[in-house]
Length: 261
Ligand code: PGA
Image 1 (cartoon, protein in one colour):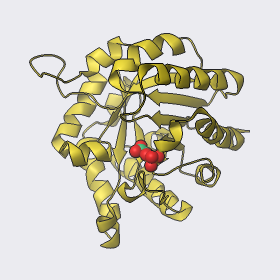
Image 2: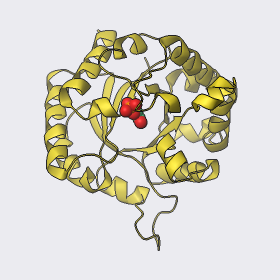
Image 3: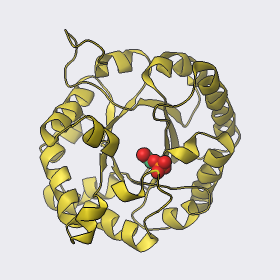
Image 4: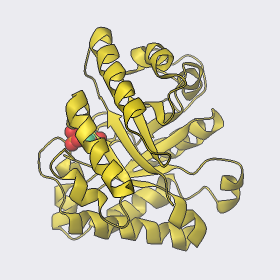
């Protein structure tokens, strides 16, 4: 069975004290109610990773991720954070290609390809985010957009590579659904997830396509999570706003636990 994943993207929110309280609450929820096939990932801001890694260490089913990394390992890049640093602080995952990075920080396909390579080189598993804008969907270009994002930044990796490296996690996040309350319908989400899995099948092989987790993100919350997670090709969620309150996040985890029951 494919791994199920609920990941919280905290974005640029919370003080260290608030972040520690939230992580502690989620940790106890994970310890009380978990499943061998469910992984919960918290992606806090960079400065908190090390502290939270101590809190979350040795908790089965709970891991930390960063929200971004640089393309290089080290050097004169004032203000930047490398994948190597993130790994040394105790995180195992890193978001790459979040639409806010693409839009506000002009991260292009080539940069994201380098970031994915760099994440792997430093022992991190990338969570590669893809998704179309509303304009692209309205013009009927949503499928082509996502195909291009896959091709340009991820599909240079070959099946051989995955003999020695973990599979990536993909997150389909329609840009028009992020932070807007306009969740994709289950039909829209499932259709795109099935398309993505088919692309992996075409470019890689059936085994890799069937084992790569594909998460949905974009206004996923306690009231729509169960319907989304019931879809055949949706393996969990990348949660923004609803990951900032432990009770909301727990409801979303609970929805996945029910799918697994
Ligand atoms: P949202 O954000 O859940 O607040 O829409 C999701 C994301 O940006 O990953």
